[in-house]
Length: 167
Image (cartoon, rainbow, N blue to C red; front, side, top):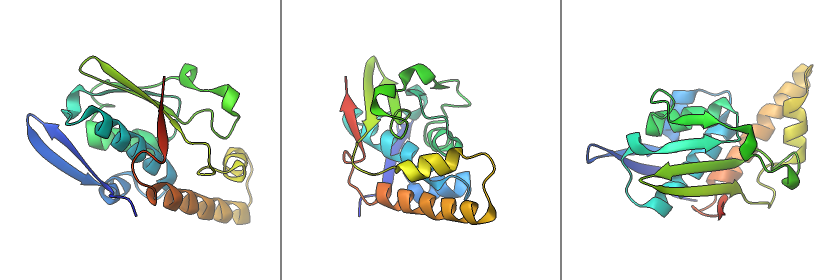
């Protein structure tokens, strides 16, 4: 299992956060989104090296509240007006399932663009059921299972094996 810790700095003071901390901050609704935000951010931090959390800017095509909360808790980027959901970052050529899993992190003049690897981390069934408007109680229960399974797949991988650098 991957190391589920992330260290960022504030005024030179290290702040260590576990994905479980971020899950508690977000709540139980969108654990997969939390995992996506955490995995993408963890990858970016590895590529940048030590980062002062209040200097990182984030743009993403991923509109989910779990991803937003992961970025907010770790970087304080939402309240610092350094976070934006930008549909133009989407990669529609990758298909409906993968198109919006794109993250752009900028820090001290450097930019890292990451996209989800195309190897079954997110399923077509999950995307279709999540988009369905009038789900039944059974479908809601199944969607919760799919969310947990996706979360587990994401967090079981080492850094760099969930998202890949592009561009």
